[in-house]
Image (cartoon, rainbow, N blue to C red; front, side, top):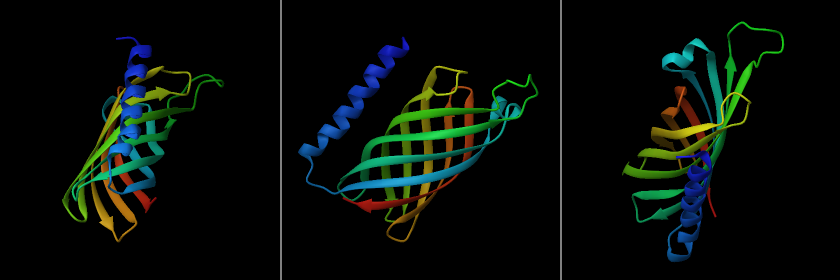
Length: 166
């Protein structure tokens, strides 16, 4: 499947998620978060760490389920030796659909699925997924542990986010 077809499908899914709000009577939330992680697998040979942030626009369905579009930016430092003009960092732009299920009021399992676009001129993009386990720290803060996979670019880490109702 070509990258253009993947992007078209992803845009369609995001439009459906946003459009589904017209059928929903439940609450809408925005969540803004930052994370830090360590490379996993073969990628740890190339990078020391990754830093990221993301914004989620979430629709609540009932007491236990949330979903919506997600967009972020992840920055990796690269640690291999090379010529002076070699690329020293790599950035990806994950665009995904985020789904969350609340096991308890303060504990949720989450999954982002989408496409990560390579911003740095190393890679065009990859299928992306990010499962995580999150714990609420009060009404607005959340701490999560995650594993992120975008092809070669895999990392695991911790994130902190702030959410507010619209």
